[in-house]
Length: 358
Image 1: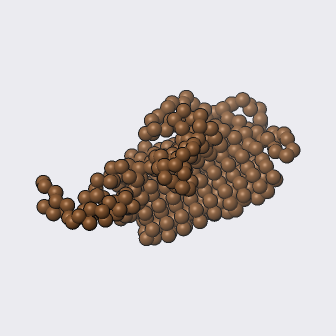
Image 2 (image 1 turned 30 degrees about the vertical axis):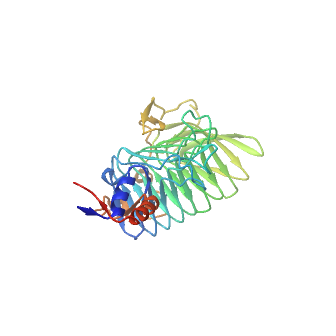
């Protein structure tokens, strides 16, 4: 049997080289565990929609020593596109890459959104930024979820957002730019939440294990339920918010640091009573256990779900059509090892076709 060299080399290289799957035709698609290759990147662009199904694990390539720029996110959503993750047991982990052939390892983001794109997290989801090192003492951790340029996120369900570890840690959630918004209804945010340059976050539930940092006069964080705040400091305001969410579940105290005129807003329910009588309650704290996500240590805290978007009336500014998932098509194309495959194929082509004996 005679086989063309390009086909042979492409098959060989997919085991050790990262692949990129792109959805950019403006249609709806789904991605399940049978569609995933190792060291796989995903791009959703040009108004396309992608739903990630249950039991799907994605992780970017590790330690590309020839990388000359910051490592790319495992999933990138751009151009008014939509990512919907409504399945269970979904894991998305950022890569960790040595830049310019040496130096410390830089962790990449798990997911980044650009240019009026949307994301819905509504299943059992673990999203980790890449780690700077195995022992978390060197390198830079990547962010779990990044929102830029008027993009929007809705976080519901049993969701864990964890920044990568290292000498400097990544953020669990990073919201940057005017018109960029995050709506957090539940889940565990293990890592700092950073809101800046006009971004906003609306908090209806969830467990925040590290402070929320808000920068810029146009940036804000709003809490919904029955809350009160205490603050100190002048140049940097340190704020502690205590109280309960809209479903009556009491929150552990949430700490915020406000810079350059940033604000925290308390949208309290009309029937709030005896606010502050019990500031020591941490209602939505439970026992934490470690889970294995294929290399990164994450923390799974169960039963921290609070108000859902439907219960609270919903606050996202977009009208997603992907809530009717799952779609029936999945025709994104995979460019597996395209550069090395092409190079080796050209070399083999100089010596003629390759014969394969079956």
